[in-house]
Image (cartoon, rainbow, N blue to C red; front, top):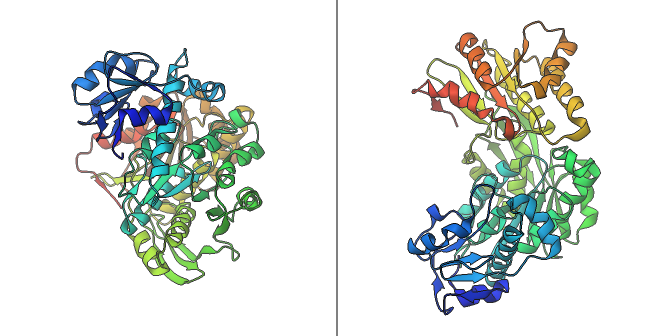
Length: 490
């Protein structure tokens, strides 16, 4: 973060000074986990379900923090923030887990502080990314292709809500040239609020799927919310839209910014042509832009990464990177965030694909297609170990049934459905293919691991995927834990 005195912070957030004169200067990072504080930092006292950050204020300062951002008086130098507005309080309290609004107050103030910092950094380009699936992987790609053009800040993993968003913004300083932000939403207005914290100049919308359908109610409402990103762009900004998704392409009418379409359709401004996949489902394609074309060999697994890469390419082009250099940077990208198409081969020849960080119908279909590509021309069997996709509302049974049927149509050799809540996936597979034991329903992770250990053989490929609550990454990690010689592939 840029250097700020406690008095400047109090002024930025509308707070008051407590146990300090205000001249104390924050020179380190901003943290809500006191264990991660460095000397000169600012501690953010966020109350949670298990612990309240206010209880750690004194120890945080004793460990080197300059002061605390707090909602009530603490035994340490602090900026005491005012209550959050009613609109923010109702939205943020559910996230923070607080019952008295103190968490909402602190997070609202953190957002105001982040906006103050962004406004001070005049040379900073803010890039926002949203979509129903693929946000984190695309954010990682964008950050990697922009970094050679200047210092770039992006969040770790899926740090994309009212806490992670401003926390990421506050990693930027005077040297930062690109700030890449992932924007999530649980309802209408969420993305607009995040854009107020850090107004984007470039905004990318990847897709509109059915994730969080139980909260939004319809795809149209999801599209309405995702489109808040392009509505927040200035007239001299750029909206990068997936032209292959009609609901996203239609967002061009909702922005005053210049629109760049990406995709595989001939009408896309930045597109992929001549697409092929290798035996590990890694894409190769011709990147075509208005300035020229170049070959890309993407070292990531899954055809769905093509759209992510095109988005990154379009954004790099907007900051002045030419087509050939964009292609070269895409050739060199790496998977950054864990449990997202994390491919590891064990010493005994079994390939484990850990894509279990989260799941929705769209990302599940992409993962199954990747598994099918990886086993299409090999003697090994493809195993899909799948679990519950959450927050689908009344579409839950239908969506799980369709995924089970898709596994059959893709000729996946074995389907292991984990948990009674995902039973419809097993039933769909049986009904579609009249499978015998090719599809099996097991009660929990331990049962899935036991089955795999008993039946896996060299050459097999195992995909694990489900919503985060199912914790199916434990299957992948258990299989790999017994294999000290496993080596991760690119």
